[in-house]
Length: 601
Image (cartoon, rainbow, N blue to C red; front, side, top):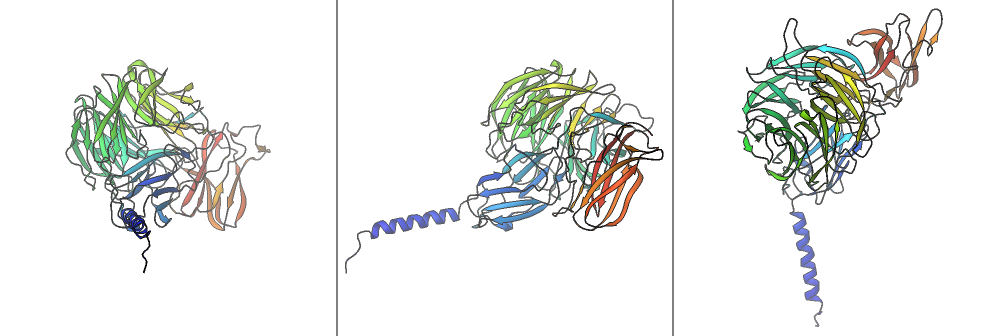
């Protein structure tokens, strides 16, 4: 019987294909595509996150710790994991709506396995932003809040974190106080305002300052870390989900702790901490043991002198978070690249032409790469450093701001799709806003006045109406300044929800708004404002009016309404001039909008 001459070739091809198949089946999963793209700006409504792998993954290895989605202000996002493309693709559907203008971090840990049981060799992470609705750069001060107790002297409130500590969907304010050695928490009343505070003590002579929030112990609740200047420590509080901070632990990191960043250095799914220690002239790496407690810190030199500030982002696009460090003495910014195994490696440093008191990271020129902005305190300037996506930086621009800028933040205030910039200026007692032209050039400054010192300016959607507001801190008089974004349109955005399916209603802009004598339906007996809203299904509804103190001053609608379009009419006769909020509640879900009454009737 004749034997085919092609048998050896066919056999070789067969065994080669079989070998490739076996290799693929036993390969560690690698991320090959993501959605949204890194540094993209996407709508917070109906947002989905997609991760594609080169091999099938084991669904049992995917949970909120191994694939976590975290909003800087809204915290840990629960949701539904959907496995597609024969388990080569994970689609994540958030169970709550992120805040507008929020910095989102998606992190994958090494515990994700392939179908054959191979772990990812390194973690993977990226950031993106949520869009804001059309807004304004002409913000209006609506309130000042005293951080001191009655009769208390100066406590030097410095720094602010706007995370949602009690999980109601609204941004609370957590404030370190350098002279009273404590943390004070103001809970949002659901209308963008704050009342009384709770305080949480730190060890004496700590001088708490730099701070950030994260879920350090993996329970799905926001925790809080603060660096202590005099104590040379980092203190970690665990959040209880109701707005309280508990289980304080403090860890030595280095003298003069001035900067703090949160990063998963080793890809185990537990957030670690990097601190910049100006007096020690190092940074410190603090590794989370997975339960919110930390190993002894490891000091590291960075190539700059007087490490003061830090920011975390993926600078070279490899899916591993990196760290930018600002030097007080050397007036440089260094970039350290993460290797995914717990280490940071020097990549480059650039003269930023000033003392980098605080820095922030984001794609300011819309090229898809991470850039850095620096508050150059003693030069009264901001520096913009452009990243090239490979781990290199170049100084692009410096421009004047107020006197002695201590803080800097990024966010899309006007809703045009690029990151604007805000500084807090100590000596000129103001906060300044700069408009981005879309290419990372900042101009057209607006000045918002503090009382004695502009120490900190945070950009966040405080009232959850879809545009970014500004919360400012005055550390001399210990005041919170609430600046409201009046908006620039009538775009409807959903408020925060905690269910996967939206409630199915919309609350539209009242008209007229603002309210003035020439813009209302007015008779001798009444002055009326119309508030339209829409229900997709019959629902129990409450529509009420709230003042700046969070007090309900009027209930317009209460009861069950049919599906469809509805209108409520507000009689503003005898309503004092000022800012008000109207709130639509359907079940446990609420939407809030602003209304400005320019005069009393």
